[in-house]
Image (cartoon, rainbow, N blue to C red; front, top):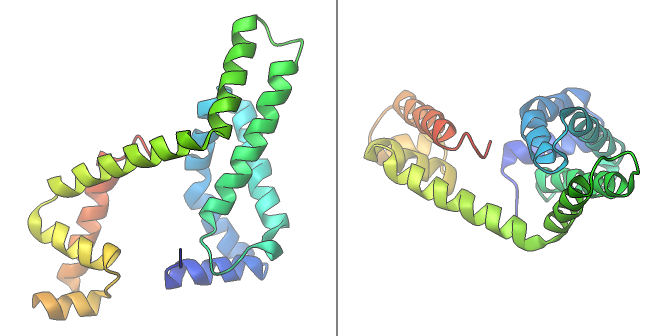
Length: 187
């Protein structure tokens, strides 16, 4: 999967050691990453540690990142592996109270290791996204589709639809706001 120009620039900047680009990625993804990890470990402090450690690993291994591929799947792969390792430790820890907790940790390990869980989450997200897109007003939906799905620039959309670039920007901004509110459970 090829990256968009902005994502590609950010990835290359991170690979080259640009801390500002890494900080931007960290700021935009930290909460989602933390939420993802906490769904499995169910302990906010442990989830914060795993998330921080994962971002640190991403920074330390930045030279091995393929700039042609999106950086987020790489980050989430690190998060997933570190979460599995932590769950293994917790499931074997004698201090973990109760057999139920140990069984829950083991079940979460299996869920993380099972790629079908990723497919289920992706399917649910696509289903909710499709529904949210259908609920957008037609003009906003059309503009958003041309921008984000077809990859047209705002200028191209402006010319194609016979509206100003500001109208295109407004439509895309409105679409993003509406989608963000509709998909808040996934973000």
